[in-house]
Length: 319
Image (cartoon, rainbow, N blue to C red; front, side):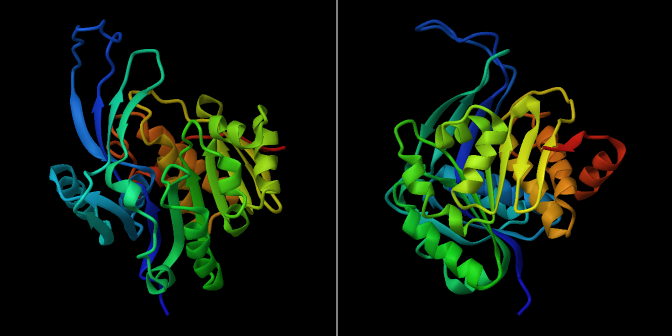
């Protein structure tokens, strides 16, 4: 049976409000001016779905939003972006998950977050048919949602594996979570695990990115990809160990960079490209994301991505 979707993206869906960088945090009772505040779609799964659709891939979303202004706007924007919202659930008891992203010049982002309707999402309504209709099954925001337990994700990934569908996992780590206990049952069912070096350090206890990647693979995932911000990325798979640099660009807002990286990598994977080329596409998509405010606002389309990678060199080496 032909696959109807290139990727079914399951997990967190968020309404983001993002401010253009301010000079400094105002004092108590004070006010800081910003040039712009924008609303955008956020959350790992929604970001990835929008980015993939932008790249000409067919993407669907499985998640939960509230029956409110933010929820309606998120659904409308996903639909306008070309994302299939058939599996987007509606909560009548919780607000749409939302995040205010505070950007300060020269500092890392700060987040004020409402979990909202995401807390109700457990993936139980994702049918076997919906999974079989995709080439890739992605779960994003794992470890953040109490309802989306390891058993829930293993069920989804087991169905995918039994039907020859690629499984992809991404995490968001709460401060007090026992992430290792959550990841151990799931990683053996995971084909590609994307994480940043901060998260990988918490999971593995390692500080060196190469050791982090090795630690993740020893926990069961077939391929671990660790992004390192301005230092590039490292990858370890069954037969491949690669390090990649970055494409230098002027950064405005880092929101959604990791999701854009994953989208670019999966774009290459869906095209049957080599792992090295997938890393180039992922790195280029991440670079395109930081040029604008918002998680998905400035990302490349497929023509722009291919042309950018063709025109710019990226250092990759085995390790």
